[in-house]
Image (cartoon, rainbow, N blue to C red; front, side, top):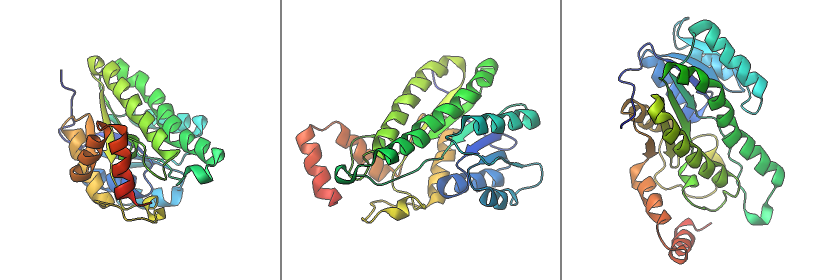
Length: 258
């Protein structure tokens, strides 16, 4: 059984959480051009309003919120239900990246990362699932990272949060496929965003947010579960997962140089 894609985004109702910058902003703009109706959320209302102004008055809903706040998420989704009656696609892009290594480990930063990157999407999925299950239709797309494939330097909290997203999406797919709800697990490599601008090392196969958005939306249209890119980098990291640990750590030390 193959899960459904979205043949055309025209007229589709999409809730993009994390839409004010980077990949989320690029997806929002691409979906507006494709004729979708978008509800856009993040903490930065001013940025959201700028994006919304690119569409017509009926095309965009601006719903500022913090993904760590359950009440704000509930109010945002209720606003969508009041106006549209539901959504066709939840696209969860929001996340934070705080570089951490063992010699500067900060438990507060780790808790903040897990709350935003793992519990945030879980909260959103928990809100939209009842209506999707009732309709036996809908799409859930969550942006994780290739950093979730295996342990990488400077990702002592970020990596575990993204590894958990992979596990979460795999189980969602297993449970929801028979119900007619599609799940899309999105694992980008290095993308030029405000978050990756913090990195002080060379980022291999770096792509733009617009390129990432194109990969994501084409993957959702095709009904793909495992959307990963750029392939030349993500396939290499997938290969590293199957290697014995001594070889894996040798390669990481050799190529990371950090």
